[in-house]
Length: 114
Image (tube, rainbow, N blue to C red; front, side):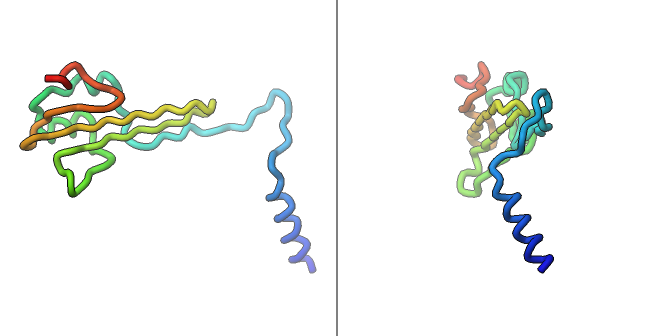
């Protein structure tokens, strides 16, 4: 009987949509970050003709690599601050013969068009 009462209590509490708020007290929310953080400064270091190793040294290992498109690296970054503000960035690097040929995405360097 005690198990049934406990189970009903757990179901009733889990069904509650919200927790009562106390004025002036807010719950702590962690900042969630996923992917490779890419800053504008990091992207400006990229130069047309760099090798894959040089690019990896500047930006880190790409989050997405596709065996069918070995000459394309995708860097994806997503962050949600504790305030609820969301930020996302996408950067795609294209190589030709193992050398950086083109950069596309949200953060683009001045060398992208060369």
